[in-house]
Length: 398
Image (spheres, rainbow, N blue to C red):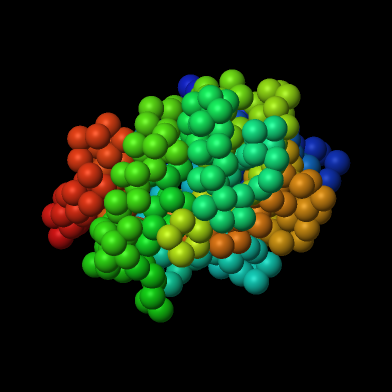
């Protein structure tokens, strides 16, 4: 799923940033090489944004492009052998597995109050901070304002608009949501009373599984009705064909699709998904950031990069330009709130919850996604599908 958000990554590459001989380098950093593992999309910006700092401190900055789908396992294997990076760029939901595997070092000298609360929460595991966040992202309801001139304030408003368009033959589906994708379905799921793991004072509790919570079970039949009526798409993918064809008033997606939305020429608005069953429809919040390898060859230099570069407005704004994701640093975020799209995504994300980052989450996605597929395909009722998913997940994590 994170692959969708971060894009398809390329082959391994490395680039060193030239070091200026005109600046007196830092005594601790001079002559050092800082190795950062990154995805292809961010590599160029990391090199450019870090070039000045590298030159001033006599550091060779080596940004290595890694395969997103394999980099976690590679770090776990390579780092203890001294073959890993100093820093890793990635999403917060990697933290649990990597920290539990003993390959991450905690963050120090980070002013947590300077960052979005979701950013700090996302990169925290068992009470310790294991990442410096640089952006936060979430999905929202994208409204075709030609088909739905009034933004739905309630889910009943949304249903009424769909019913009117359906009766007129103007639209083929109400809300386009990628088939079987629990991440994109999270607002609907949470609005019906579902959750993944409970969260308490001690953090995420894997023993408190809410995939088939009492509240969701009581509302499950509504989901059956949404699929049978066409309110929720049964077979949409990440191309959102019906929305772009002007045949769906709503779709659920994130800021990574803003470019395509603008190019389409369809008048749009970004809104919150209305509460479905009396409970707020909360999206997942994804956080991206830097993680420090416990086996970093140049840990002091890596920490200097984090506090002097990654924790700066200029750096976070440079990464913001890659895809309109809201900077995690509050001062940087304040400088982009004049962008109404970013502000709208941020407003909805403010009620969101970070994706669980504990290792047990790896046992959730397949069973949970299959539940959505089975309901969409008419193979099971929502009550049966999510009860089965919950049982499978409990067995997997026990």
